[in-house]
Length: 351
Image 1: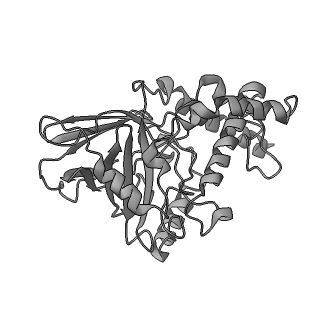
Image 2: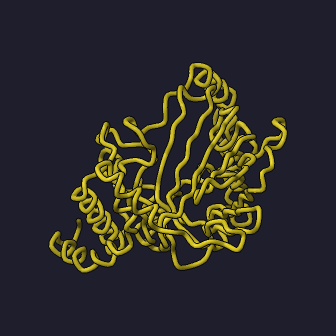
């Protein structure tokens, strides 16, 4: 720290600790390999409210904002859950990090580039705009990664997938900025990878669920996408029709909404996945918590299927409009910059 003492940071953390811990749903705190029976019993004992059609009420504004990484860090290899003490230490570290950021500004990356922001990014301090993840409600879990299992990582690509992706990269090399169609869908604000499966984003990790007879709609705040999921027993659309977020078909298994999604394009959400299949499960485990579980598979993409789990917690608020490319200036400026660079390169080569 540059001018704040460690003692002041610890004192600040102690003052706000109680309010932050109050945000942790009891059902999420209970997640532990040592207490599966207790968690299952608590889930069965709680009865979710029902809608007029008799289905569990999942409606509301929620967040999946979390500090848990999708894949388990190498330093935690083989460790699927934190202990209670380790979780409290992680919460303290997050509070202290936010306090330093808000009082001193976003720190630059250290020599290994692991923490903080790069030199070119320090001018854009998320905390100045309320976008630092710790400034919003966090859904804490004892899991060390969203992906479950001993490895806690996305499985290796198949040989065919490695070859396919290498060909895609080779074809694009030197042409990355030829036109908008060469840029990733996320950079073009068409589709983001946080929608299916439903994963936290860097900020604005909020969503709204609305239900009616035979349908469930899930809107993600970033970047404005709404998935309309029929639950009326219909089949998937024909296999030759592909969509950015696939074709979701839902059904209820007791109090759990199960969503089966196929018919993705090979551009979204995982570039090169040609037969992606995602199964999601939404189970409301208490008044303020939905347990979200998912499985992703494509035998031509990964050597095996992989699954994940994270809590979704209720927030008081509403979904706001997310302007990805305001008037699309960002994309136009990116391409304009590429043309300027090409012109300069041509002038230099002619000398």
